[in-house]
Length: 216
Image 1: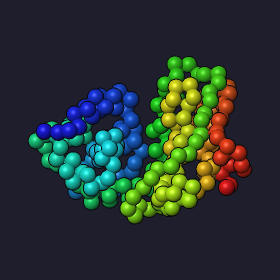
Image 2: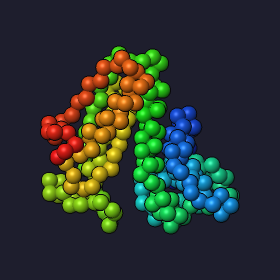
Image 3: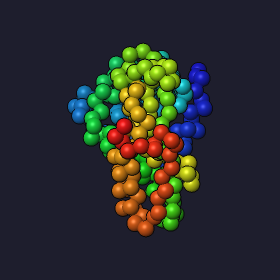
Image 4: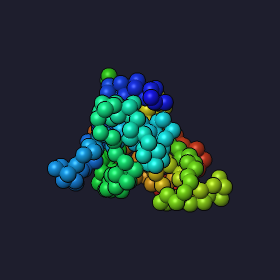
């Protein structure tokens, strides 16, 4: 019936930490409710769980939209109408605004802050970039001479104490590792200081960050 039964416990975990729910709450839905058949939360779960199952392409959902497990993890019964099609998912993703993206940052930072029973006296943030090979004609992919591939170089900031991800940013394929790090750290420090005024924060990065940060 399905090859993705392992996603069911992932949905149970998601119900506990409310990641996809917070993700969906950060997105503004400008559609007419009377003409809407695919809720934002359902489409968010389609895409996130699809990526977790190594079905990251939107085209994969032309089949997965009928999969009984994908229906269950998206909040439907196996006999209910199919989930969103590839064109619907494409319109959904392209409707996300810059303001929505700013709000999405909170979907990672809020669970991090809530994971501490008491304000820590010190925390260490690790900042890094990595190569993400891409295929096709996705927007902003470019050929990177060092990695010898078409790619994105996302930025990621994690906590050394509990390995939680605080921030992820997608950037164009040939940017310097430090691009945008200044604004990302400024946002994180604002959130951390607001919640924990006395916390000491240590930021660690590789040699690529040994430059005027965010200007390279």
